Image (cartoon, rainbow over all chains, first blue to last red; front, top):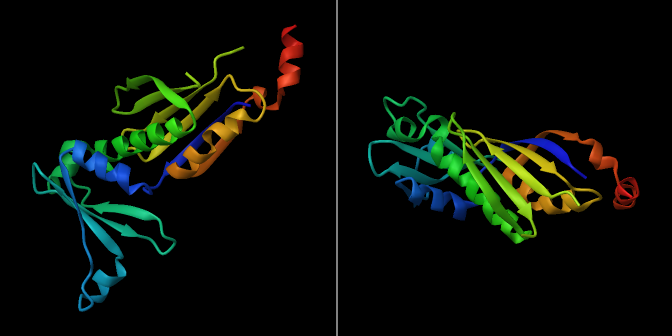
Length: 132
Length: 64
């Protein structure tokens, strides 16, 4: 069977996310919220911070109530060097994360990347061939 | 037999992916991509192509 599908990506594979951080010059630091921290800080469920090695940008990783991980950061490139350097919503950092997850999971199924084409808009097309 | 491949089109910010599976007949395509799609996130939309409804047997009959 063949099909077409559209997906909204959620960050689940922290190993791939850490590798994407390393590749893009971002420090990944796990944090714990102290018991005496403010209600707002405790409610955030933050468990890691990311810091730009090449600027003042930073963001946090937090878990939703349903366990999903979300990346939060200032979206204005004037105040966040991660956005200025890598693009909106984490840009290249998240694109590389998604690419790493696809390569990793497809390899487990016996698939191999036969072609990777950068798009003009900054996107990426990966072609996975079966049983190469 | 047509080449079996899957194209993943990743958006510039990495938060959307379009998956386009081609050349598969039978149930192989779902088995091949199921775990990867689950790991990536939530399927927002899905469309089955005509080949989706063709079984291996039908495919061979049509070719002969």
